[in-house]
Amino acid sequence: MIVGVGCGTISGLKGRGWTLMRTMAAVTFAILLGGLVYLDRSVNAQVPSAHISLDAAACERLASLTMSNATVTSAQVVPAGQFKPPAGADAGFADLPSFCRVALTIAPSRDSDIKAETWLPLSGWNAKFQEVGNGGWSGDIQYDALAEALRRGYATASTDTGHKGGSASFALGHPEKVIDFGYRAIHETALKSKAIIAAMYGAAQRFSYFTGCSGGGRQAFAEAQRYPEDFEGIIAGAPGYDRTDESFQLVALAQAMLRDPASRIPPEKLSVLHQAALDTCDARDGVKDGIINDPTRCKFDPAVTQCKGPDGSNCLTQAQVETAKKFYAPLNDPKTGDEVFPGFEPGSELRWAGLASGPLTMADDLFKYVVFQDPKWDYMTLDVSRHLALARKIDNGTISPTSPNLKPFVGRGGKLLIYHGWGDQNVAPRSSVEYYKKLVAALGQHQVDDSVRLYMAPGMGHCGGGEGPNVFDTLTALEQWREHGVAPKEIIASQITNGSVSRMRPLCPYPQVAQYKGTGSTDQAENFFCRLP
Ligand SMILES: [Ca+2]
Image 1 (cartoon, rainbow, N blue to C red):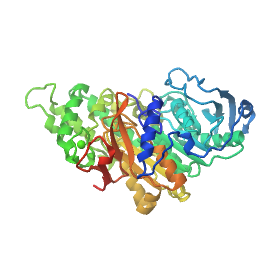
Image 2: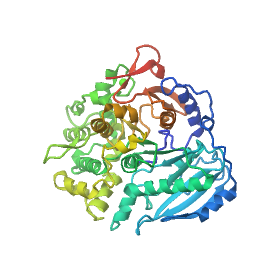
Image 3: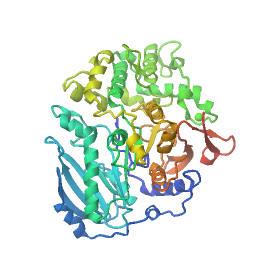
Image 4: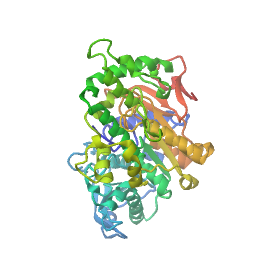
């Protein structure tokens, strides 16, 4: 189970298939943002270049740059097409232009050991900075996302958030490292990268952006809430921002699956549930296409899948139906009746298999290493009514940026673009809707309309994948909004099948949903419009 991949700004591609992405981008640019038309296929040519061209010496001089609490450990030019990623990273860097690769170590506390890389184009810099986020427990430089930003002309940066690898074992006895992971590493990397940009180019960036998905969406929220001056625009995909409460829900589902062998839904039966959900709700949005457009309006009772006779491969036992009900239902605190975290949506079932074999590392490790500080802790012992208050107290906002106070961020013109797949199997998508509603309550609808957009993607999984169109370009929408005042309306998403576009649909700004006009191909975006439900 992949938990929180480092998702880029073009959802679903993650570094591979850049040729495809450029084709997609050209199509998307032409119809994005309510008819704003670009004719230029070259991404870099759309933004005014700083016309700065530098040589290797300018890069190598950065090795002697002095900064507080930080050391540049190397600064070297990587010639075009020569970048060699560490083992395990995706291939697909051969098209990178030449750039200055700066590695640094940042230590804002005595126990900090934050590694970061800042990449700076040698020519064609778009005069902007983009920091990219991490997923799950982070712990690695995100080379794919760095490459994606560099291709668009950005100076860009990524951090390992202060530890190595995808486990939270680093947290044992290291509260400062938990803070680095929670929010400080991203912030420090932004500060240091801006200093490096100034030293390299002799000019500050015109705009700074942050982009991330999953854990990166959580980092995005932390930035918007804690450091409103770091970025002028922020993209938060599938934000796992309510990390502690979400972990209770994920562990509760693992308990429901595995406490009793009879309760476990075998992965091969998930398609039975999925088909039953489609049978109930797919056609209700006007198009029978295997996608539930607005799952909040889908009243699906998994009891319809219950075996009439003995257990069989095409039905669920009563115990399995009870488990399924827990997946769809919110997790509530039995003491207060309050919702702790929302459930998953009808339509997401095919991706539940990762939850059928134990708790996700992102949830299990939180309790093991941060809350109970006991590597032998057994997830079956977690009890919402006994442990929720304790876990929330320990978190206290360090890793769960739940505050709706974005006034300082939006007050200086900051724009926040959130997206989330309705078919997400890791971070329940209603959590994003709930945050949006909290923002409206805190800031008022007018201010939210001015500064925040939420796009829910029907049938999309966690940061990509799924049955619905899941490839789209949020960064262009953000650039147009922040730099040119063109507020995003619909964003066109594509479904890619066997390497080519098989379906395009508009993603609508929440609370609007896409509605079929009633004529024309249901695979073409122009035959849909956004409307309030
Ligand atoms: Ca449908």
